[in-house]
Length: 338
Image (cartoon, rainbow, N blue to C red; front, side, top):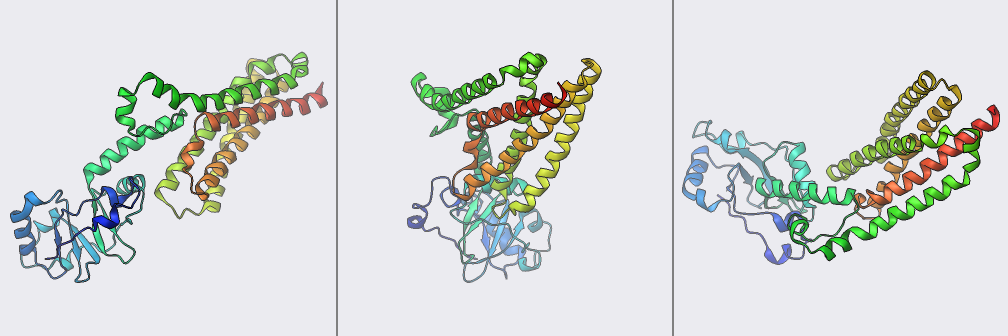
C-alpha cells in the first residue's frame, strides 16, 4: 500500500478556489499489485480515516496515478484478483491550479463522484470529493445568477446575500445598474434620431420592445451556452464552435423573421410592416448572436472571467445595437416603398 501526503507549503500559494485548495488526501490508495483481499482489509480497518471511499486510487512506486476502481468493483471480484486487472486507466484528472467550477462541471460531464488531482508529472496529490463538488455547484450557480443581473464580488454569496447590510447590497448592485441606465439613455437618444420614421409609420414604435427582446433572448442563450462550454472545455476550438453556433442562429433568425412577418401580414394586413420586422429580426438576432460569442471569447483570451460581460453590460450593448439596426432597416425600406 502507498501513502499520499499533500505538500501544504505548495498548496497554500494556490488560488483559494483552485482544486489544490479544496482537495483531500484522506482516501484509500493502493498499488497496482495489490489484491482485492488486501484492499478490502484496508477499507475495513481504516474506514474512519478516509473522507470518502467511493473510489480506490491506484498509484505506482513513483506515486503517479495509474488507475482507479470503484468500491462496487472491489466487493464483487474474487479476493485473489489483482487490482491492476480491473482498474480503469482512462482517467479524468485536474491540476492543482484548476478552478473549482471546472472540476465540478467535469464531474457532471463524466458522471463522477470525485475528481483526482495530479501535478504536471502525473503524481497523485488527492481528490476533490463529492460534497465539495456539490457545494461548489451551489455556490457557482448563485454567483452566476448574481452576475447575470449585474451583482459581483460578494466574498461569500450564500451568506452575504442574506446577512449583508443594506449599504453593502447597494454598493454591489449600483455600479452595473448605472451601466444599464447609460445604455437606456443611449437607446433613447438613438430612437430620437429616427423620429421622422414614426410620422411615416407610427406602428414602428410599438414593435421596439419585440425587436429588443428577441435579440436579448437569443443573445443570452448563445452567451450562456458558450460560457458553460468554456468552463468545461478549456481547449475549445473557437472557429469550429463559432461556425456551429452561427448556423444555429441563422436558422433561428430566419424562422423567427418569417413568423413575425406572417403574423403582421395576417393580423395587421401590412406587408410593409411585416417585411421591416422580418428583416430586422433576422439581422438583429444574427448580430446579437455574434456579439454573444465574440465578446466573452475576447474576455476569456485575456484571462478575464467571460461571465462578467453578462447582465446589464451585455444587455445595454445589445439593446442599443438592436434599436439602431431596426431603424436603419426601416429607413432603407421606407425610402424605397413610401
